[in-house]
Length: 462
Ligand code: ATP
Image (cartoon, rainbow, N blue to C red; front, side):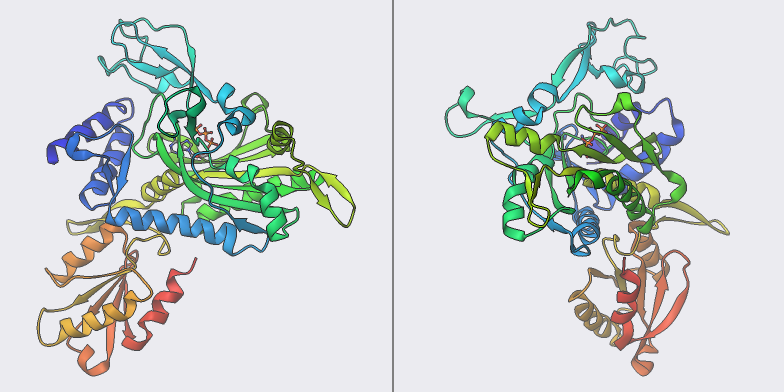
């Protein structure tokens, strides 16, 4: 097990030789994720499957909380957005119409010497696998001319493998929303401006995967298509761009590590009028975290042309029929999860040689909301602590721990981002109160047992 972990940390760090601080922080985070059960390499006992990851008991809670925070902000809290959950396989013509079959490509080059493959457009960030101190092409190997590689995964539906049974694993969730536009309008009585949101798996056969869960071949996306009257598109673009930036800072991401970057016109996709990325300064540099694009009416127009269906919206007040324009915020769940982890990670020196590793996760995202500790394993304290645990479990993910000194129990929870630790002590039997210790400031306060739920409720709000 340790050997596999070492091997994959080594593999991971090899890509970062040019940035030693990166290696340090990312290695430590990858190791913490493995050691504490956040994220494991997929099929690890078989040596792992490159670029695929499994979320462990803490990781799955964190990821669910990230998705829940997004759904809450983007759907539940808004009367102008509804949700949808579409299938991963779609009619293959969808991808012809959307342009993915012809154009969802990255340029690829091969090394004629070691046969390794690289993405031609990001080659400056890659290293030669044989001579990791050099970049591809700077070693003895000669590179082929770039050629286009389609990123969609292809398979066959049903028992017969021929051209007619070819289907694709969706490379984005957005197309499911466009092809259901009419269904949603007809059944929900939504009218522009309104949005349809979706969370779900997407698949891209990336030429190079990198940076732990930052870029993988199977990942989850959270996308929302906001349909607006064409004249309102610019205004809504600015609204969603700024709202998406704020979502991250509301969830505690440090503003100095986050920026909005408008795309230059030569960076824009053919269907997009303008686009901004929310970028985060990862240990491996500033990278796209989320994209917000004005997709105009490109997708609805194309699907209408391809199917012969009228996908225009009919405004019964103005009696106008038109294709709404679309503002799309598109975020990767795994990339967001990595951001929250990286941003929260800190090694703190507490003085007198005392250190701790702490994840300053926003309480709404923390996998465990409270640790519950009886001071000792006897004298009726475990019974009171278990009763509190049972009461709180109805509402929050909590964790009971009675082993080791209290200080060590605190440290174990700090390292996984648990915002509160509740200690049941001898006084609890008489004053019916517990001590709640807060993770970041390490302050403690006495709270009556019957007010613990309200105390947590108040602090877990987002
Ligand atoms: P990149 O330039 O990083 O490849 P992109 O511009 O192709 O990203 P979009 O198609 O806009 O990405 O997808 C929206 C979001 O989905 C991205 O901002 C990112 O958060 C996430 N995402 C895209 N590709 C991957 C991937 N291979 N692994 C993990 N997340 C991804």
